Length: 339
Image (cartoon, rainbow, N blue to C red; front, side):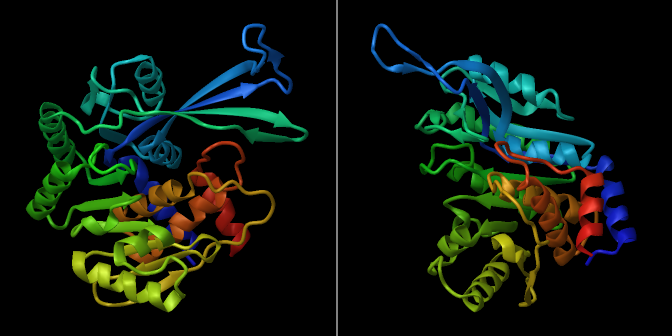
């Protein structure tokens, strides 16, 4: 376990960090409903009654929320959103964070990716109803890709390291398309010692560079193994990935913790703290990313970084009905409780 002094040294370094982010930035819009709706005269259907609207940056924004809560000094997001009302609301929330938004491209030909989540109280619980998704399911234009790569290079030069989040499932329809992935690879060749941390839902195996992170299913897809395979299979798979990239690989395993493989052929599971009570695992992977990346940039070893990622995630999953965050004070308290 991280000693208290070591944990303090890592957390105290975070305000000095400038972290670049590249990928899909969404708006998470929560619609809080009354317990009982009204009947529409026109359609005869129930009309849900919204009493409060909460907006929050999602996808790449979830990582940003976590980085901000940890106390990171400055974030440089690089992405493409729409020039629309959802984009306006998203930028308003982004500007509440320690962010320089100059590299966010607003494209009038695209819709700002938005997850609208109706939340209805049922007894003592709040239940999420069917989500409404807004997204342009088409590739970026060549002109926008060229502009995006220019902005990525500026972010690369201005930051201590990059987080790359490939969220969109449809091939070629998100920010991290083939051209952007190739450009990021070229940047990694220019400065191999600079951190590029990559999290991809569907295409982790397409990255032959950077520090790769995925959950069981994502690592399995990248390595061509069964997601239900035993742990020795995942040890072997992550070791192969690390040998291919020449960088560490992180595989999150839920309550078991995080499997870490290094380029020298070693692997180990860093156990997660035990957490009890109701849990909400939405955003747990993004909170682990925030902990891992900040630790690595602060000088931590891969296993130390995995431990900080586990601590952050163990706090966020106890926050129900939202994508939670963790502060340094909460992390210190969790470490004290689990020591």
